[in-house]
Image 1 (cartoon, rainbow, N blue to C red):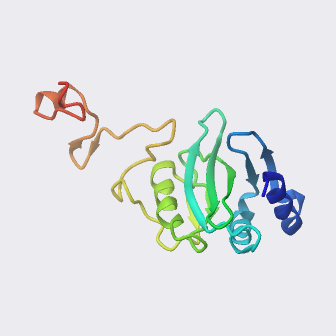
Image 2 (cartoon, one colour):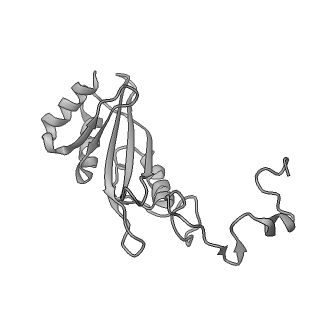
Length: 183
């Protein structure tokens, strides 16, 4: 089934307005979906007998930077029985430091793999997923400050008295870093 045919199925079920933008490029075409409709669209793509997107191959958070003022979540869907691929995205406004985190509906009730993907996106990019069963950090400590994959992220200097940044202080105290064989 072609990208256009899948797009038509989405439009038939949800109307034209559910697709904010389309990018029909050859390498990886994608559709930008209204944020509040992403879970419903994903559920329909999973349940549709012509499509049956049974795998969420990847779910990724993207920071477009402070200049662009947006964050994205990309969903790479795959249908094992039909060999269909589809990429969906939602684009949300980036929050300022004093504002609450942006929120996207969870798809973890459709694909269990989204559980950890969404926790990772929350932890590293700072996007919350409403309806997620366990929205907490997964890679950083629970009290870690900031979101390390944001383009304007500045690591805290100390974490519980431990110097965070690798520098001459670490080298002089015996820590050789990730490239210890070259040091």
